[in-house]
Image 1 (cartoon, rainbow, N blue to C red):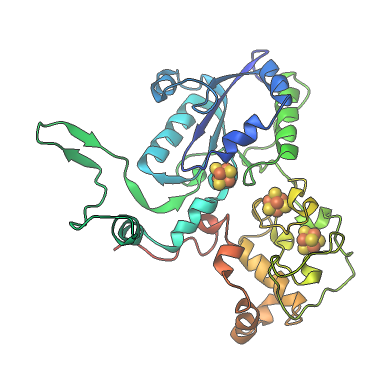
Image 2 (cartoon, rainbow, N blue to C red; image 1 turned 135 degrees about the vertical axis):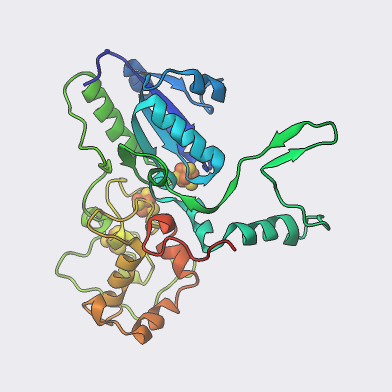
Length: 337
Ligand code: SF4
Ligand code: SF4
Ligand code: SF4
């Protein structure tokens, strides 16, 4: 339980699309309930603050810090470390901080290839001398300019600092934010204990376990072809997989409130896997194998079997590891040379 009646809160982004900041704004009128128990002392999106303001704060003076976004460059890492120093509790907020998220898909490439594409090969680039970003440059008058180092790979927050809690999803949904709000309020008021360090603030079951379209435990689904959501008009009552539409519910942690399913869109897996599963893509592959009638047991799958159904998918890596590549068993695909 915190010492004071009111705690302090800071938000800092790394390699982020800022959608996670917007998710906090989406607390809507509940934001007033949050600021009744927490003063937001740092947030470049919500407040007129400078990075120096954060740097000057005493260590551990912020009760809870939310870091969103992945760690793509040295600036992201530096501020992840500063947040760790300044905050008593550091939360990896959103899929990017939790598992690397969509920026983590860049781990299929490397710095050299990304620079070559962005600074040389794009049709709008005029760079005949092939000059790439440098971390330090001095002009003719001796002025030194610096840029953060662009890393060869993308990391999740806990690859660079110790993390206390994880809030998954891209971005965390309203249902999840209300859960966090109730937890913070209950804790500040002395009515609730915080969960054990390292907890993911979500469910331990899969999305299918709480999905209203789940055809029932005993019912076997069998399909012979995968269809794109754009190729069919999905039945709004029926399980997507039963309709041959790829839905990552079997390999995805529950707790988001299933907004996509409610909007008649299949799950893309942004909550990541449950703690019982090491690899979300592998888990989904095994679920698909059983509904394709290939096998009840992924250990029995032959390479030919796997190829048979993976070849039906346009982008298997992007579908299975859209949010979790840096924390998956694959981790990355190529190294810098
Ligand atoms: S988790 Fe999603 S919304 Fe949040 S920063 Fe990453 S990409 Fe943006
Ligand atoms: S596969 Fe998708 S639609 Fe079917 S039960 Fe699971 S989450 Fe629901
Ligand atoms: S339904 Fe799936 S994609 Fe949609 S918010 Fe939940 S976990 Fe993310």
